[in-house]
Image 1: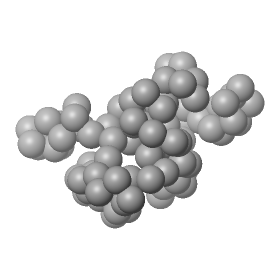
Image 2: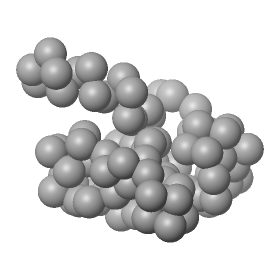
Image 3: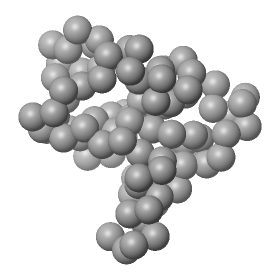
Image 4: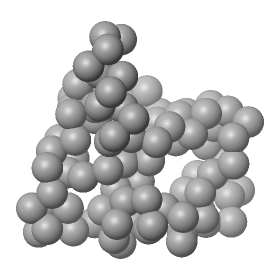
Length: 93
């Protein structure tokens, strides 16, 4: 990953890896700035994004597009496939 992509990752994406706690609904809403929507990504990963990102005219997320080929707007929380807890209290699973 190049330095520019790493900079984007810090601004646009919070990544949850195996062994890390998944965010609560309140934490996810605070990070993304709105109502939470789940988006299934390639490789079994999951994105939590602002449900109204397009309506709010948020900027396209360069990380989700570059790494997954998925057009999303605003910040995203990425839960990697091996970190997904299908028994999570929040049901991100």
